[in-house]
Image (cartoon, rainbow, N blue to C red):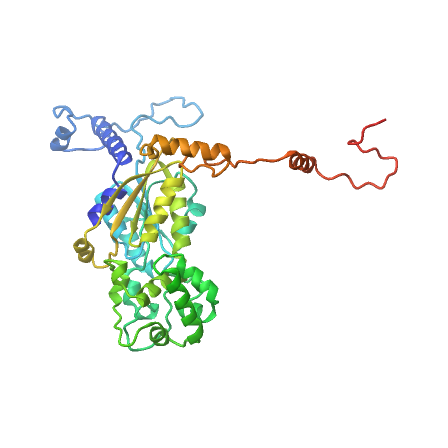
Amino acid sequence: MVRAVVQAVVGGRRLEDIKASTEFMAEKAIADGSIGASTKTRKAFHLPTDKVKRKQSPRRAPAAVTPAGPAQLDGTTKRLVTYDVLDCTFGGGMHSAAVLEAAPFARVVALDCDYAVGTVAKTFAATYGAERFRFFGNRMSESLAMFGESVFDSVLIDPGPTESQLMDPRRGFALSSENSHQMDMRYGPQMKLGALEYLNKCSQSELRESLAKYGMLTMEQCYKMSRLICSRRPFYGSHDVVTAVSSPGEQWDDDMWRYQCSLKKLSMPAKFMLSLRGVVNQEWHELKAATENGVLLLRNGGRLTVLTTHQWERELVSTLVQEHPNALLLYEEQISPEEVLDEGASRHHTLMVVGKTNASSFPIKNLHISEEEVQRSATEWVTGVVGGQTAGFPANNFSFRDLDAKERRAAAKNREGPEFDRDDAHWINPRQKIQ
């Protein structure tokens, strides 16, 4: 699991370019004597070992005239070459640690809405240094407003709760506990309402639509669960909610937060709890904003890596790749269940790697489209039936407008703007023809 993440985050053409630049600068610095190197190191860079140049300290000649102006820098000036990574979901720091250990020239900027991980972030800063690791307690949807566009080489998104949140009974994820508690389920204090408070205040239609957005429950099940919640509330603890949604004698397994082999094997109450967790933490909106911002945050040739568990997460990333002109799906890697269980806190089945292209990626994405589909799309676009059925062909930013003569005159009149409000009787309207 960690191997796949490291390969996805710090792999690709951009990494090879930085490696080549680093080796070139190291070879140049060793050759001119800026830094010392052993005979073995000089042989590795194919440098002569008989005569080693030593860098001479600059000396000022007596009575020398130094012209005024900016200092002249020689070719041995060190230049910082790094590989910048944004970890949108820091959590326990497993992915950030793997990247920092695998790539010594990588710098990681981590985000997490849970302030409790600040202790782990301080440990990382002390271990790897402030030059290589920075942490901010913000949501991943705020990344674009914080950093701007084209500033990272790789962006990593790992949605879902962390192991520390699942193990802490105060966070409200323990459903099998006999002791009733305030079912919070929030990832961070930025979320407005906890799960228990949300169930007591939301309307039936709002709850039904929110549950249906995640696609784990059918529409009939969403109707059933929303009616059941509204008829059984108010709830005073987690035990009340579990009793209301559970079947008689049903046993809850807290491992459902970590690993799901298939939605078909999960009961309807378990799917309800998973959907409720997504509603409380706004997971759909957060992931959608994070993936859209991630493409903008990347430099050309950068990579967006998303670890997905549920079908709605994969559909969200696939929709982004299909609609964004500079996003291209590089590859998907299925994580075996044994490897997922070995990692303990991991819950993911599919690793999706999206690359950012400099030019439009629609010609590549449309290679699999047949000639009949292209003709049908062009016909529908020209006739105004549906605009742009095929992604990027012939255009995806046009709307077909068929106006009659009366509508065109009204539109032209509206473009001219309203007449001036003047009380002067001698004022002449410029639109009125002079007889």
